[in-house]
Amino acid sequence: MTRDADVHTTTQDKKVVNFSVAINDSYRNKQGERIEQISYFDCSYWISPNVAKILIKGALVELTGRVSTRAWTATNGELRSSLNFHISTIKLHGSNKKIEHTQVIVKQENTKIITEEPVDDLPF
Image 1: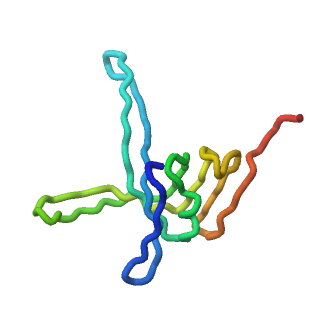
Image 2 (image 1 turned 60 degrees about the vertical axis):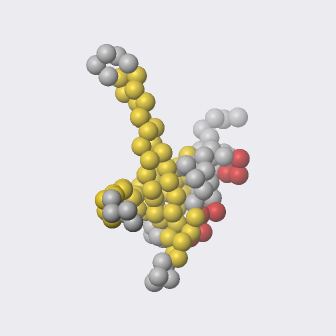
């Protein structure tokens, strides 16, 4: 995550959680050089505003949902566009100190925040 989540209320009194993520990718070009590529996405989660408490900058998240485009004209008359990722499922992997060693899963059909301990298959 590139910033902490925040909750906004729409004009119809619906709450939406907004946050952004970065996706790191790499590949090798024809010359064999490793190319690093970072893509940024604005995300919105409409199911439960309570999830904003655990979506913290630097957290590692796994997201499921759909991508939509948005186009508008800026105040200076310039045409703008962006991608928005509408999230239906969030898996928060324990990457910060507040949720270390846990996995939090939030699904569309259940608006509760579920914390699961990681499965450890070692006998000791």
